[in-house]
Image 1 (cartoon, rainbow, N blue to C red):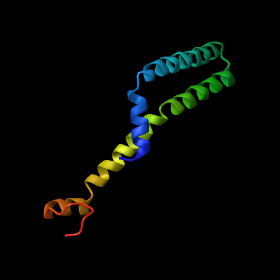
Image 2: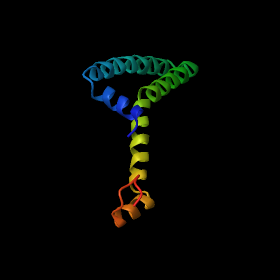
Image 3: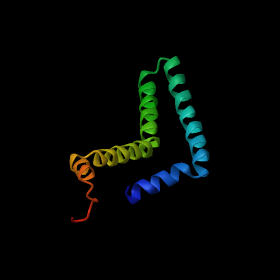
Image 4: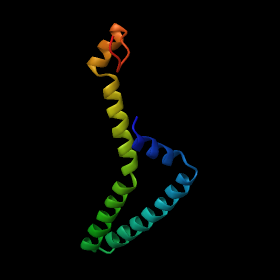
Length: 98
């Protein structure tokens, strides 16, 4: 795994991560309240604005999880690479010449 993966994984496992998630939850609840208030008043443009804010916020907040998932999938694909499977089958250590 690369250095960026380790940094993101360490961040997610740090004690401050729960505090940050709590703050994010508080912020998104404010956005949802504003969206719902605008919708209840029939203010379509305001409702669309807050709906866009909510979507953008959620995309930004989950960026690290998507990055971790992508890196894990890439690592998994490398592990199941046919060349690696062949090397394993031939019992030749990767990165070394026979």
